[in-house]
Image (cartoon, rainbow, N blue to C red; front, side, top):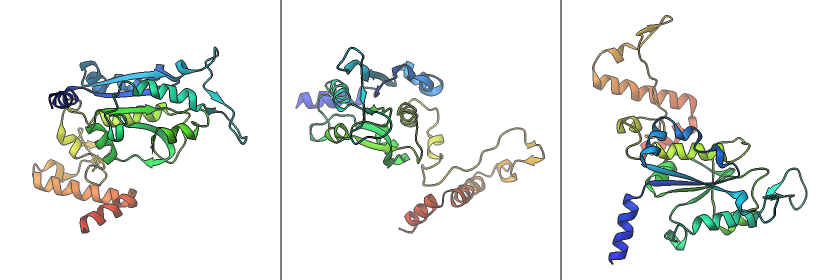
Length: 255
């Protein structure tokens, strides 16, 4: 009983941790090392580590890829090399996850994955962290993705040169939700997607710029009217720019 309580206490005090399996560890922390996320990283609010997949190559040339079976352009990352990198990472996880798996989810950014939304980001930020597998070339051998039950996510309907930029985006989206990273919880509550809507427009000084004035309601000091205006603006911009979000929002409201 005491051992279980100790593990729970450790999980509550340990920083949120991101581990990136990549062929280019020098790309990290990159932009994650500056601004609020970077300051929080220095303070130990969250942690970042990289694993160089080339360290697990089987030959002196550190080969990590090979030609695809069936022919076609490009190269494919080898399952044996990638799996050894994953195994080395998971050995430190202790098998504490559901079904004896890792405590942190193993995620692979791919155009064929499920779209990454704010709800999933919140779930990941609330957990112990993430393990991110970065693909290169034409991708990773399907067998290792199946064997390791890798979660595939997509950042959008486009193709990147590799998984590293996607990993940076996902980590940033999670890190900014961690306690002690951003200054204002209210900022997060009013951001796009948090309430099913895109965010309302913002204005600051000067009050008039190039013949364009700040909406009068924002100068009124009437907080209730300002809230109503912002809500209406959020609904308007969502309806005009993201009909898919608007339909989902309206459906949730009706339920």
